[in-house]
Image 1 (spheres, rainbow, N blue to C red):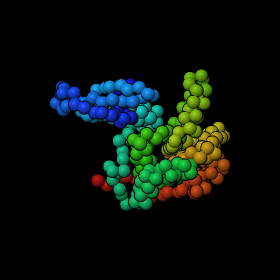
Image 2 (image 1 turned 60 degrees about the vertical axis):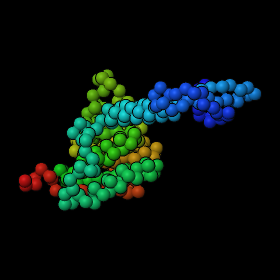
Image 3 (image 1 turned 90 degrees about the vertical axis):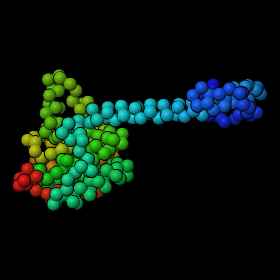
Image 4 (image 1 turned 45 degrees about the horizontal axis):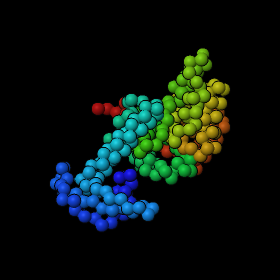
Length: 259
């Protein structure tokens, strides 16, 4: 009742009780409150106590937010290697400028691109930094409380195949892929293709496109090279630059840079 009264701000005939707050030594007041034809007299909670409650509420909300984000991170599948990468600690190299800018803009404008189901096809040579840029997007969004699911494509297929002997549920894995706020598929084209892998990837992408959910794909291959390893229907979807803008990371392999 007291909290409801504080929020209503309908005190009348407010008067000093002559008492002092034990915490801040401010005078304690009381006032009358009129509800449904009745009048009640209550002591008015001291402002220091209200401030304390507000601070505690904010602390509780922040703790809840942190727990929620920690749970999102746990379920995201983002490899430990990439947990702390950000755009702020990304070290640009020659050839990464355009890709870096595109990824920063994507993360900053995510509510808009998400509502339209816009993802990205981010490609470049091995070691160019594209996976790191994709992970920077993931971390930016996870910190905002947006669900992200990360899969290395080869690992995704192996994880699904591992359920075929009754160990786990392939449907749960697929549901995580199709329902995430953002799905990131890393290193597409590195897997050994088969009719099953092609059909599986088509089902994932097609479901997300139909549900207007964005997907980021990274690959070492240009789209015409990927066409030799992927279902033509998948290539057709990725070719749509309104849904999958093509972003080239033109940097060379950082592992080959002389130090």
